[in-house]
Length: 332
Image (cartoon, rainbow, N blue to C red; front, side, top):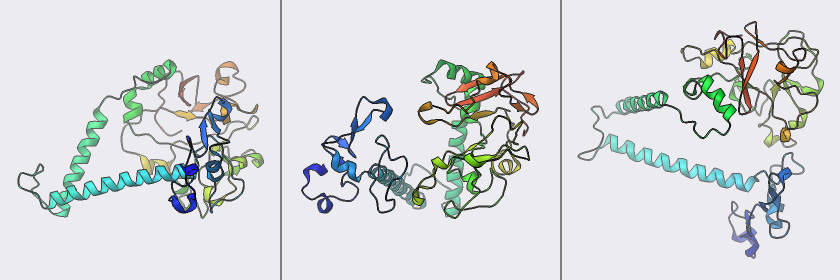
């Protein structure tokens, strides 16, 4: 408890200093305030930790999203170290097991004919393949799914299809490696997030596309004021009323080359809309409900055929047509 230590700067290690103050973690305690996600500052006993919650040498001044309900750098640091120790424990166990494979004791559990490094690697690949096959053939458990509507959609899609089959994700979100590798944008140029990459167009300045391609966009208000934090962003694909029909080929050829597993395509299309803060979207936002209520407002086609039904699954939606949720399975 940093409140009980006379000189925390000298007596406590960096990771624990100003982490626990009284009964608070980083100066925050539970409260009855939905606007703060029931996490409020403890102004008396947590003040010392609150001051240092976001204080680092890397990012000074006002940095966006440093709210009471968000964990501070001390909390992230602690969780990172716990994960690191867990990985080190696994590494130690793996080295012990590897030594047993190379120099087994009498009556060893695993009897290998070839104890060379190549032989051991082949054995481990075989074991991993068997584990993967067992998992893919197992039945998914979804009894605890919270919503009946979501469960109905899941049953229509097929739990084994959703949880066991490979999928190709065409996402604008960062940090998606497909953005940095130029796969989603089909540029083919691998870029480092710190050195620059294809960012897309600023939402506030974007013009109607001349090529009919759904544009990649970002909101300038989502960007940080600290360069060290410029990595996690909710970029999106943008369409506005009056722009006419815009489209994309999904999956594109770069995505097929990178992620196609040679399995039969199910032809399912799931779309996830941008999540508005506190679920309060601006008036300009249009949801999928307008496909049903006002056909003059929103049209979607897949492979040239109209989307007529929407099946919600948590924050995303499966597109359905006259023959159900499955389309031709081709890119389009």
